[in-house]
Amino acid sequence: MPMPELPKDLSRLSLAEIADMVRDKRLPPVDSWSPEKIGHIDMRIARDGSWFHEGGLIQRETMVRLFSTILRREADGRYWLVTPAEKLEIAVEDTPFVAVEVKSEGQGENRQLAFRLNTGDLVIAGPEHCLRFDEQNGAPHPLLHVRGGMDARIGRAAYYALVDWAMAEEATTLGLWSGGQFFPMEPA
Image 1 (cartoon, rainbow, N blue to C red):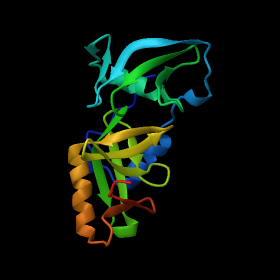
Image 2 (tube, rainbow, N blue to C red):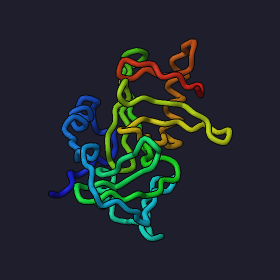
Image 3 (cartoon, one colour):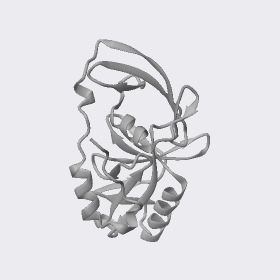
Image 4 (cartoon, one colour):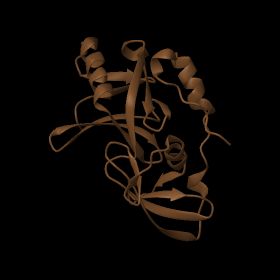
C-alpha cells in the first residue's frame, strides 16, 4: 500500500485539517509484537534526523517514513525496528524525530500548536504530546513527545517561533499553552 502524500507545509492547512490527519493515521501495533528473532542492524538515525544504513544515507523518503512507523523504544532506552517476525536494534544519536515545522492557532489558553516531523508525521502538542524545554551542553534542547517514550527534537526555526509566541504572550512565566496544557519554557 503506498504511503499517503504529505502536506508540503502546515501553513496551507487549518488546525482542524491537521487534527483530522492525525486522527486518521494508524500505526502498526509494534508494542504488541514480540518476535523471537532478535538482532542488530547497522542502521542509525543522526542528530539531524537523517537515516543511515551500513554507513550510507537512506535517500528514499518513503523508506524512512516506513521505518519510522515500526520504530519502538524500550524502557532501557534502546531503539528497535520491530515486525511480527524480527526485532532489530538500531542506533539513535539524539532523538529519532525532528520537528521541522510548527503552526500556531489561537492565543493564551486557547492556543493549539501543531508540528510536522521530518518523517512527515503530524503531532499536536497537548497532554499526550508534551513539550519539554531541556538543556544539553548549556544550549536549549527543546523536545516534543511523539509516542512510546520517543521524542522529537524541535528544530531551530520551530523553536524560535515558539519563543517569539511565548514572549508575545507577556505572561509571568515564559511558556505556551497547547491542547489545554501549559508548557513552561524554563528547563526542569
